[in-house]
Amino acid sequence: MRLADYAQRLSDLARTVNRWLALAAKIDGQRREKVALYAEEVAATLARAAGSLTVLEGDPHDLPALLAATRELGRISGYLETIVATLEVDLDGRKRAGVKRRLEHLKPFDLEAAIREFGAFRHARRLASAEGYFRALADTLRA
Image 1 (cartoon, rainbow, N blue to C red):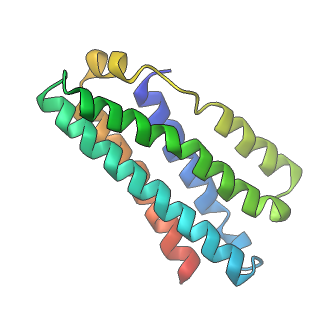
Image 2: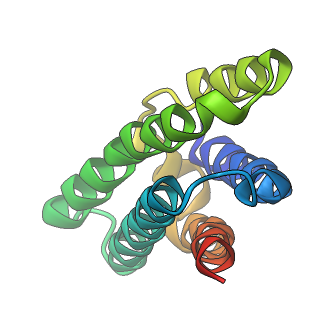
């Protein structure tokens, strides 16, 4: 999978979760806060990954930045699975299946090849866009 596809799928998933905010009214305060915390973690993780990609734009051979970006992007699926598990009780079968399908598409990819193919800065911008959706989700859950 290309990094561009990965970033797009993250954005799509964040948009989907944001559309479910009508469910937020039904969720108790403790679960709302849990989802908000994990959404913030996803956003912070995306920000760190984007920062590493920006470093890689300047020096594509910076191994620590490559490892940091890879590590950060690897964390995201776990955070998203926790968000979905928290909301699972309130999701109907169709929505639950759709999210699980989207999570399955967030497979590991060759970050090094993705950077060689398109450069890192373009991907950093896409990750920043996805970060914005997750920050908005956290803010909305706390409003």
